[in-house]
Length: 143
Image (cartoon, rainbow, N blue to C red; front, side):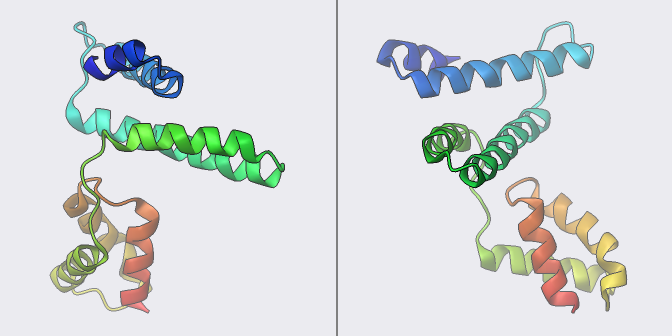
């Protein structure tokens, strides 16, 4: 809410529209969950921010394929606003360490064990790395 107010005062239209959309999504999620105080927990909020970023990334791909770079740039600006609300991303070395630990823990030896490993890796990463990055790291180790 403080950032929303700051965006209003600064007349930052990109941040303002992005934060308003995020606030609406958070409120809708709280209402859908039956929360009478319209408050969502941190895990749900972070998942929602990631979902918003993913939607914008998909839009960027579509805009670029439709030869609309100006709209893609707008989506990139919105992503940069949303990324401020995510925890710091894991480095490649940290991802590799988590994957190695999960493989050791499960005793995985082939791609058939990928599901077991991914469950542990995603829990340990706690949303600080996207699923695509994690699955690529697991595949690389199990191949």
